[in-house]
Structure formats: structure tokens, C-alpha cells
Image 1 (cartoon, rainbow, N blue to C red):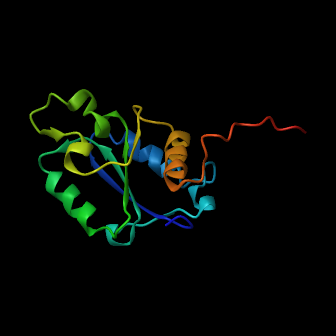
Image 2 (cartoon, rainbow, N blue to C red; image 1 turned 60 degrees about the vertical axis):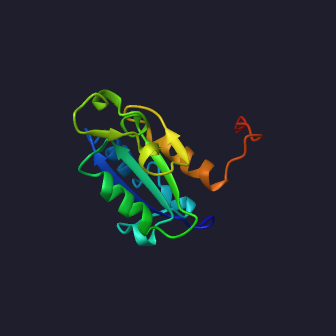
Length: 141
């Protein structure tokens, strides 16, 4: 998983702003594939699950099923304020709870929607490719 993790996304519900930012990771501007990360549609082949949107009562069991289909050493990243707290939908009748109440979450990316750089940073931090001790250095030309 550290060399070339496969990523699966699950948009539970919401405004789709977060899923558009996840899709931006695949564009040449951000190019998450340069780190070996590949987007896969099947959770059975994925190492990292990106969850976006609110977890509602209709999709709660589907999210659990997708999580259980993943292989060992799976990681989950909750993306956006809807996945983390419920966002503006937390008082809705169909809200089943934040993602970490349904499945274990390894990392949170706050924002509404979060920038693609923040999602990319979270994936790389989760993989251990970034160190806390490493500080940005000025590029001299």
C-alpha cells in the first residue's frame, strides 16, 4: 500500500462539491497518480476509502458494506465538513451521524469543500510520505 495505493471514493450524499475536488486530483494540475495513487471503482481492490458527503440513513449500511469489502490495512479519509460533522445537514431528519460513528476514520480533511491540495496532503500524510520535521524550503533559482 505504501508504494502504490489504490483509492476508492464513496459520495454518501450532499452537494457534490467534495467529489468535484476529488476528481480534480486526477487532472494534470494536481496529478495524484505521480505518487502511485490510482483511482479504482471497486472497494475490494482499494487501500484507501475517501468518504464525502453526509451519511444518511439510506446509505449507512452501504457504507459499512463497502468498508467491510476492503482488504486488511485499509484506511479511511473523511473529506469535507459534511462527512466530518454533518455540516449544514446535521439537523436533518435523514442524518445518520458523522462518518466516524459508522466506520473508523483515520484522517479528516475539513472544509466546504476542501481544496485538492488539502486532500492530496492528507493522502500523502496518511501514507507516511511526509514528515512533520520536514519544513518547506525556499527554492533558489
